[in-house]
Image 1: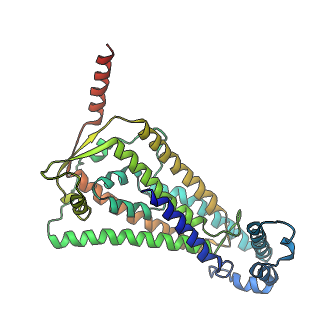
Image 2 (image 1 turned 120 degrees about the horizontal axis):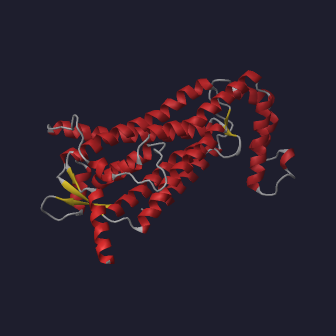
Image 3 (image 1 turned 90 degrees about the vertical axis):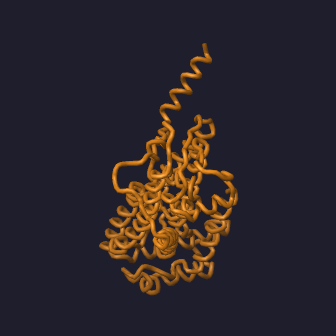
Amino acid sequence: MAKLPVALVLYASWAKASTESVHFQEWYPQWGLQNILIDHCNESYQGYVNNNSPGCINEYNSHRNNSECRARLVTDCLLENLPESWKADMAAAAVLLGLLPTILSLIGSNVVETSLLSFRRPLLALLLSFGSPAVYPIRTFDYTNLAELSRPRIGPGVRIRANSSRIAVLASQYLLALIAIANLLHVSLELGIKTVCSFDTENQYYPLGWALISLPIHVISSWATWLRMRSQEDSRGKHGSFGQRLADEFTLSAQQRPSTLEFRDESPMFVVLSWLSSTAIITQILYGTVVFSSILFLGTAVVGRIIPRYWLSAVLCRAVLMFEIAGIRSTVDVQDEQKVSRIDSAADLSNAY
């Protein structure tokens, strides 16, 4: 778990290094920006490539700021040579993209549901967290009733009996999760390469960074849930062994052994982690709104193809998650969380007297 942030940083650094060489070289084909760059902005572009823009020699001392200055000169030149109708279309596209993080958060996965799945199938939960571009917002200090979430509901259940069908469903779950991850990474990286962010014209990894934030949010929420709940298996054998957990990972939740979910008291660490995850969700939405609304050189026609791709990753992960949640509801016996709280409160009151 401690290696996860390091891996994300290394991946972001690799993405940045891999995209620097193609900055201002690849564009979405809607407007033919490459021709404008060659015909009207070749001087500023060559200064960016060769690191010798006269307008940036004395403006900054550091190499990084000098690079940002050269990238800004190319961006300004492109904007000056765009027709006004294209600029209006660009503004409309920025509005649509600015709404994207909020829209995706409404259809995205709930961190509590992902945390519940992590009890049974942690690898699948991790993949679904990685492929979910946004997280459903939760109010600060407003905790989801895990007991109510886990109880069976009236309606069609998850019944898969044939062994071949189980293998096909398992393979489909991991395949859909991997497709969602690949699609999310590709569209985010492509968006960063083929556009420019107005507040930082040099860096290209802001959309990708936003997409990766959801993973640590789910991890933090799962940590909080593990402090609040524990699963007691209703079977013989060594509970929690590596072999049993590995077998559970590759078994549908609806086909796993019955278990009982028990609740613990809310510890200070649980409160802190819950507050941190809910605050991080709002921060991700705000960060995404700033990033996507600041993207330049993109029209509404292209945005109409980008938004469905983000939506696809969110829906795929959501569908797999809810299928597993339905299976969990059919195989768990849940303690009454409110009843446990009342018993604990009564015990504390009697001890006080």
